[in-house]
Image: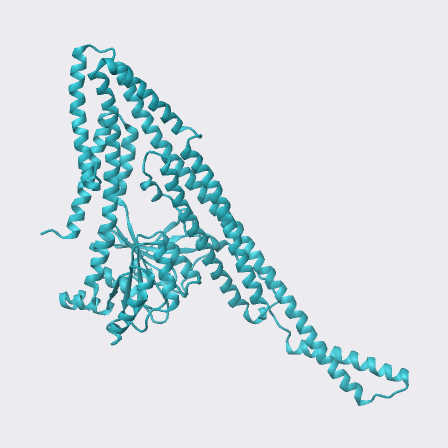
Amino acid sequence: MTTPGSDVSALTAQATDVVDLGVKACQAYGRADLEARLLVTRRTLTHAGVHIVVAGEFKQGKSSLVNALIGSAVCPVDDDVATAVPTYLRYGTEPAADLLLEGDPPRRSPISVTDVGRHVVEGAPTGTEPNRVLGVEVRLPRKLLESGLVLVDTPGVGGLGSAHAAASLAAVAMADAVMFVTDASQELTRSEIDFLQQARRMCPAVVCVVTKTDFYPAWRTIRDLNTGHLRAVGEVPLIPVSSSLRTRAVKANDAGLNAESGFTELVRFVAEHVGDGAARKRAAQAGADVFGIAEQLVGQFEAERAALADPAAAQRVVSDLNSVKQRVEELKSSAAKWSQTLSDGIGDLTSDIDHDLRARVRTVLQEADDSVDTIDPADMWPQMESWLQSRISYELLANYTMLRERADALSLDVADHFREASGAIFDQLAVYNPTPLMSGSRVEHKIELQKMKASKQAMVALKSAYGGVLMFTMLGAMTGIALGPISLGIGLVMGHNGLREEKKRQLTQRRTQARNAIRRYCDEVSFVMGKDSRDTLRRIQRQLRDHYSGLAEELARSNQDALLAANAAAKQTQQERDSRLRDLDAELARLRVLGERAQAVTGVAR
């Protein structure tokens, strides 16, 4: 009896064999262009990773869960500190780790696996530009990771509007699956449900894991409550687990304790639903690629065979191929409908993304202005600065999510105007996490945050009081009225009023400086992010253009080969025709067998 994992391994091996046969066929027929496409398919089939993002609020047991899953205490677990940068765990034949430092692409700095903890927690040295630590990659020889699974332990989200939440959602947008972690101390909060809804929108494969079931006796009640909450999110399975029980079960090799920990179901979900599902998709895509190429070669040979089998009809075959050639040439031109759709779509998308970004920044500015009116920057500026960065992070992520979704839709629109499906190309379109780009933007407040000291306040009050006493004493002398002690009372009142007005003036000045600082920061972010989104869209345009232009070139090459063969058929003797027909029949039979094997992998009916 085979297990689901073995079935997928057999399917992957079957798909690899089919791709290898397709490569050999392309080599035999001198089609280096088609061979290059299949070699890319083979690399994707055998080396593609499946990313599972582990997300959740702070102190919910994410790192303990990851450690328990892989059976190694790599991620730091501490009640006093929290994970501050992502940790990527993937397969390696020997334990090894690298710091991922800021750069394009990120630079690597080897570290010891035992030192991983001190680099990923809050308070760890983050370096200075351009050496800021973006994350840590750890490679371990673990069976769970051997199939290409990559576990990503993210910082706590800290509410939907936090910078950590923006970074986690950006990772979710690139993930194959999301493991959302919440503990059994309480039911899902509003912010957790909001995050899950956002994650569900970005990634269809989401599972909710309730941790610490061994610590909270009422975990079953929490599980039932959370199940009700998840109905509003969508089809999100819920799995209760205990990381500490799992750790003890692994050490004692106790299958019963392992089942009690809940990790049996979680590992099955990771291995079968996530890993196997991704492997099946890759195998199906590989089969579709081979099937499409086999059909292209079959069409080429069938045209030649038709010209050879009926010399009287050869002229008609050549005429049909010339018509196809004209259509293919039109397909290659910039005036082709797919090309116009791509060009117009990128132009519209660039304008819409830029407008959306400006609107979001304007909303943040308005909220910031309203907040500044109610606070004294001298007291609240650090909190205001943190809020501004978090708020901008969230809006940038929403803007990039819109870019990704619209680019996906554009890819499908272009595919509708082309004769080939676009399934593989969008997987290569890179829409990166925008939040690290903000590291170059600082909130340079230039605000006089120092309030008046007591000595200065006394001097201001004394100055106003002295002026008042002097003015009213002189007025009394001029009118012949001796004010006496009254002038002192008047001086005190005027001193108090003068001090109050000076404080009010300084508060107004600080608020003005705060607004200017916020605007400078938002302008800088808009400038950096606007350029990055335009660069991203140009990269997408080039990738789509090159992909479809390459497909058009392949079609042109196939049609040209068929046209040359059909023209040559008219000049051949009957004996040469008979010999070539036998060869063609044999080649067509082999190609049809290849197509059938590719169909078996894809499961698509012909």
